[in-house]
Structure formats: structure tokens, C-alpha cells
Image (tube, rainbow, N blue to C red; front, side, top):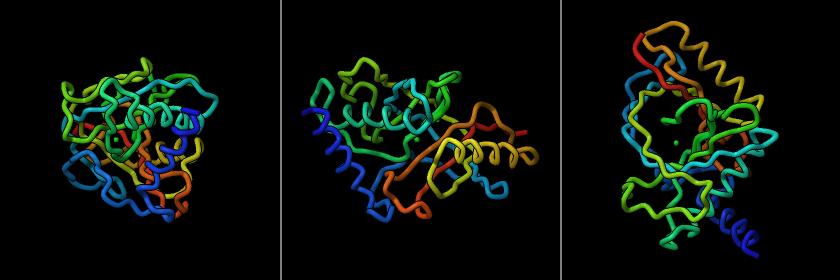
Length: 209
């Protein structure tokens, strides 16, 4: 019963975005745009509070789905305060091999393992954010970082995200900014958003060359 309610709640959460994929009123981490390098945007993010979980799965898509389910449960009330926490964007996916410092985020965590991250609303601090009931969820403070971001549309399959990360790194082969860590993926829209309206981003921390 709880899993069915959670699935329904997740659908309502994602419904904050319209069926055609227009995001309205969804908070994103504050940042400053420092400039552009071709199609790549350079952004400076301050410290951010996030909830994250590590997922072992057969594919990046399966890991993203499982990580989203866990974290959605946390913000829908599976926390010690039974509080509902507003959804933000993006969701991040990244590798466990590196310390994640960057929206939701998806990054490869070693063979078959990924870290999925929700950024928390800016109104919370580490002291005021409710503690998750699920021990697989960690609350972390993400340090400030300068990020190179390549935005793209379409369905973010494993092959598509890998290709965009490679394109991002290639674009940084020359110019004033160089990669300073591993690339990761940020996602802003629910799965039913029309592919050409979806907002995805390949992201990597950078430093001046």
C-alpha cells in the first residue's frame, strides 16, 4: 500500500511540471553565470544542502528511478519530522568514485553504482532539515564550485548522457577553463515531458587554465 501511495505521490510531485515539460515555480540552486565558452555555460554555485543516496543497478536509467523513489519518499514525509519538503531542480546523478559537489544530480559511482542527489530548498539549514528515516539517504553540504554546463534536450539514456559528457569535455579542450573533476548529469523534467522540451545538462567542475 505504501509503495502505491508513494508512486502516486511521486507522480503528483512531478506534475508540478506540465505534461509538455514547462517548469513553473520550481526552485533551482542559486548561481552566477560567469560567461560562456562556445555552447558551454560557466556557472558559480555557492554551498548547497542536499539529500543523496547510492544505488547499485544494471543501468543508469534504473539507478535514477530507484534513487528518485527513495529521495521522493524522504521529501514526501518519510523523515523524523513527518514534514513535506518542496521539490527542487535539477536531480543529479554522479559516480561514487568522486565527492559530489554539484542539482537533481546523476554521476557514475563505480561499476553499476551511482549517486543520486536532490538539492534542498534554500530555506533549510543542516540543523533545520528533517532527518531521513531511510538509512540509505545521507544529508550533505555541497561546497561551492565553478561548473561548466552543456545543456541539451532529448531522452537522457545512458548512451545520450555519455555522449554529452564527452562533448562537454571536448569543448573544454581549449579556452580559459579546464576540467577539475569528473563529469556528471543533471535532469530537470519528468519522464513524460516531450523529448524536444526536456532540459538535461552535462556538468563538470572547472578551474582557470
